[in-house]
Amino acid sequence: MTALHSLSPAEASRRYRWIPWCFLAGFGVVLIANGTLLYFATRQPVGLVIEKPYENGIAYNKILAAGRAQAKLGWAARLSRRTLTLARGVRACRCA
Image (tube, rainbow, N blue to C red):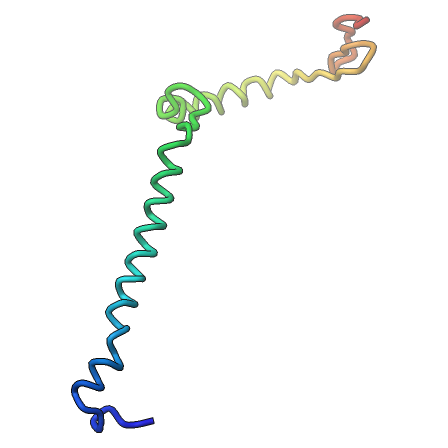
């Protein structure tokens, strides 16, 4: 292998001509990846599960408080094939 300072300017320019192409290829890969992600992002549905998710998120503390209030009541249900029985042993209905 020859040292860089022993190469003539013409040989050095021929030898390292591929380096700018590597930079262009790298940018090309990034652009293709971004284009692919953009394509798939615009072709998919939004994915909202509920309407007004921001407002429901703000009201989340109210939902938690309602759940705690219901838990204080001690209600529970047990479902079987024959009957629906409340946790306190009261038969609610007879299922056919």
